[in-house]
Image (cartoon, rainbow, N blue to C red; front, side, top):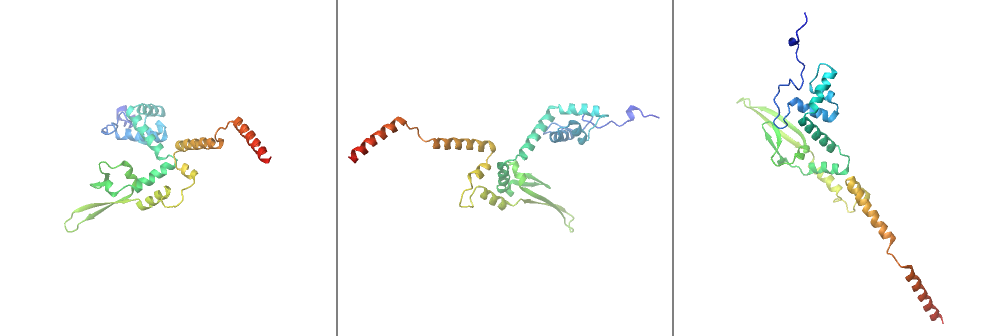
Length: 233
């Protein structure tokens, strides 16, 4: 006997998702996950399926996925994540220096332990999270009283190593400054290009030298020749 349509379990999709919206994003948890997947793969159908949603067919899934992509809040989250990813993998020297300084200037005072979670203290820069190497939780039970306590230990990346590398980058540990091209290579490409252009123009100006009136040179030469003739006589 064929099952009635009402007896068939409804496939999970964003329309029948009954989870409450997150107060900070205005999206349901799986809608937020969809936006993050879409930001990294760019394929709405794949992102929809990876999220755990689906339709009865490819066409139905595609229609549902495109509907969710068109949701303004989904687009905002996806754009923000794309920007974060682009900034995270920037390929320039300034990016490397920023990572060093994140570790070098972070402090254990940037963090606080709330329950069993490590959070940034109010006012601490979000970049300080990158300075955390590991978080270890240890549960200790007092056999005499039966009390259970969870201790959280934060380990940061090697601060002194980051300081040392930063000092070397700025030439503070060597007597001689690095070659000019090394300095330029450490700058953002746009700034380095402008500085090279300025230096080339300045060099051309020095090479050309001051403008001299050739007529004055000839007159001076004639005068000097007359003086020499008078002296020889």
